[in-house]
Structures are given as structure tokens and as C-alpha cells.
Length: 261
Ligand SMILES: O=P(O)(O)OC[C@H]1O[C@H](O[C@H]2O[C@H](CO)[C@@H](O)[C@H](O)[C@H]2O)[C@H](O)[C@@H](O)[C@@H]1O
Ligand SMILES: [Mg+2]
Image 1 (cartoon, rainbow, N blue to C red):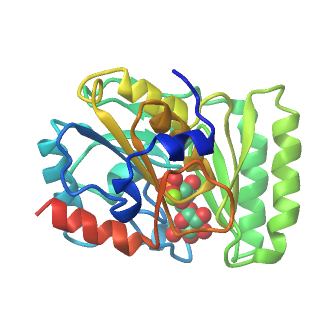
Image 2 (image 1 turned 180 degrees about the vertical axis):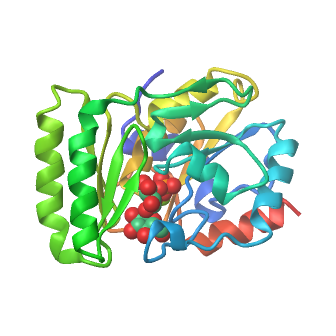
């Protein structure tokens, strides 16, 4: 796999991707979809997101049309991604790529380490004392959200950074939108998309990845290397290796509803 620079990827990308970032005809494509900020609008807390009623069914129809080559690639825990789109289940990379369920049903789960327990307990106590903080336990990782208590952000980032540094390379810090977490080191959304692309029904298809956040850049690098298309949502003011952009999650939803009809 060749890793392109952002400039190389943009130069090599098909011109159509700027006028029409999201393709109307998905024949031969494989779809890698981020959830928060891409399919769903951000909400005050992880449990408060709204999944439009039509969406699980539309994803299912699209997945069937792609012979199953549709994966959710999310920072959320894998089981949590399933819950959001119940009753349908798709290939999923959860916990930023650390946990994978392939289209065949085969699972690759990161080890659950007791090294995380003291941090999880400490963050749970902090969240209990400060109702603005929301703990999200992802089993092999743990996140603390400060969207409703931004004053805690810097201190939490420092605390989790120290924890990761003391883990002798076992854990990494992942920053997100008003959230900081520690997750197992080594895996990311790029390694997960590479693994999914190595197996049917993704293998041999052209990858299209859509995401909005820092964690999505790793999968953008991979889809660029495979000659696919990386679409960033929300036009944030930071560099990206995405080759196309859309304004907001609503654009992704409108496209999805239309092409899945
Ligand atoms: O990779 P994603 O599917 O985009 O997941 C990234 C994180 O999304 C969630 O947190 C974010 O969305 C919440 C709901 O809108 C919001 O309250 C929070 O502030 C955002 O950071 C999710 O809870 C995390 O586990 C994901 O890592
Ligand atoms: Mg996202």
C-alpha cells in the first residue's frame, strides 16, 4: 500500500468528487461510514443522539445492494453502534478500529485490560461528583465527555495523557469533540478499514469513507491509498487528507436517503 500525501491524493482524485462529493451510483464501491457528526448530528451527550426512523432500514437496503460491503467505522463501542441501528447489523469497526466485526460475523476484539480499572473508577467518581461530565465505558477503552462542563477539558486531557504515558505503550490518548479517551494502542480506523478491505465483500471494491473528526483521518489515508474517495463532513478549520468535503451531516443523510430509496 502506498501512502499518499494530501496533495498527491487530491491530485489523483477524480474531478467529479469536488462537484459531487458523494457518488450517486455506488456500483463497485465499498462504504465506510462514521457515525457521530457524519450520519447523526452531535447531541449534548452520547445517549441523546437522534437516529432518524428511516435510517437503519436505508442502511440495510444499501448494504444488501453492496453485497454487504457497508461498514460503520466509529469511536463508539461496537455494541453501542449495533444498538443505534437495531434491528439491523452491519460490519462494524468500533472503538476507533480496535474492535472489528467482519461481514462474515468473525470478531476481532481488543484485549480487555484490568490496567484500565483504576482510571475508569476515578473517572466514574469524577462524573458522579460533577453532573456535567459523562463517562462512556467502552470496555477496552474509556472516554470522558466534557461538552456540558468545558472547564474540565484541559485537566482531563492532561490526566488521560499521563495515564497513557504510564501504560508502557499499551494505551493511546484519543482526542475528539469535547471528549478525551484512552484506547488500546496500535489500532485505528485506518488499520480497521485495511482489515475489512482484505476480506469479502469489501475486497476488490473501491472504498468510500465519510467522516468528520480527527479519528477519521487514518481511514482517509487508507482509502486514498486504495484509489478510493475520502469525504470530510463539516469543513472544520484544520488540515485533512480528505479529497472532498460536504457542509454537514444533513448532506450525508439526504444523500443516503436518496440513494437507498
Ligand atoms: O467516530 P464517531 O462515530 O464519530 O464517534 C466519535 C465519538 O462520538 C461520540 O461522541 C461525540 O458525539 C456525542 C453525541 O453527539 C457528543 O455528545 C460528544 O460530545 C461527541 O464527542 C461518542 O460518544 C464517542 O464514543 C465517539 O468516540
Ligand atoms: Mg464522527
